[in-house]
Length: 261
Length: 256
Image (cartoon, rainbow over all chains, first blue to last red; front, side):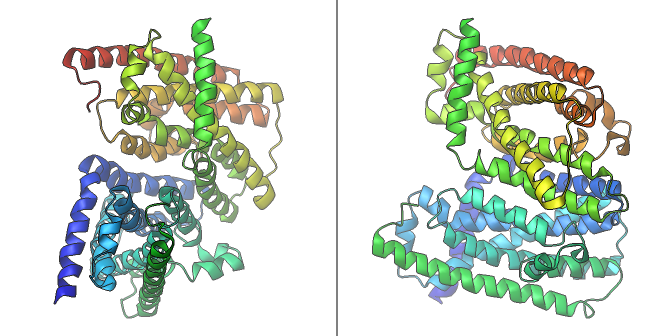
């Protein structure tokens, strides 16, 4: 019961604290306007290159942009606490760590999903893509699974935040790698073999592919394998991230370096 | 003469500071490379790989704008956080001469990104950029950097009333890449976008660099970039005068 409380109440408190700095003046330009312009940028590059349809870029970039809230907000759960000098107080509590950290991840998934969904709807409307109404709900599900998957990677990133001071640099670099490797803008078939191999093991690759197929008329059953793969990647990264967070916590206590990234 | 010395020293001082920052130096170089890589893959895989050279030159300049837009918006706010704003404002030198070298230094850091992107395109994608007019190319780069730095200065003073100015600066990164024709020709955009492109110095800066590299006639573009840069600076000085007068009258210099 106590763990459930820590999961929900702790997660909600952390999310509200996030909005202490993620005010509308940050949220609107960074998470609502920027993804629309990322979509437009790649739609126009795509038109110039004659590579794929507008729909390809709208879906790819809208889903991939969830990386910004998922990576940055998860990292903030560690780095933000250190900045506020509250990390030690949190890690000294007897609360179980699994609900403590996963509770903080749940609102991040929801936020990532909302950002992606907004970009998909508004970006799609501006560019004028045609997605069948029957695909809306399955695409929403795939977008949520992709946000979950990237939040798992965000937890790994948060663990690295224990030892890296410039966590925003690291988050931006991971965002850039996801942009290149996830197939958001370049069809996977046009990437070299070694890049495709990496693409298979990162968030968004399967989710973006599933969303594109759904928009082209396939059903959720048809893309079930892709959705399951995306979810599995999220679980693996989440587990790795949780393990790393615990490891860094132990190392931080042992060497008295919690506050000293 | 004193003002020129102040500009030069301020620029050198802020270059040193920015180069110590992973966000401004390392990320400033690496981040545009991701976008350049995606664009290179897209053009290489597309119907016509000829625009690859066009995109390569544009992508090289993307970093100059990125380093400026992401940092300039908060340039004045940063002095406020450091507690140095009051000291700088009360100094006998006009505050514009203190702020302008900061944003020009930010744009100058983008030259690292420019070199890195050209090298990346050459080494990984085999894009061989031959410089048609080396002298004009050398003139086009400082004109572009200076005009983008001046635009950054205007942003810095225009966003002075916003506590989260950095987010507004970040927001402008993609739109300027888009409407200034860094990666796609302006002819692809609707007609109403053109006047917006014309009043943005990066449009002329990137044109100048492309024309110089491809052996065209870059001098009109260099002139336009310099002219717009001067206009941004004058406008920025007017805005900063007004903002400082208002802040002193209301005693809100340290507040946002």
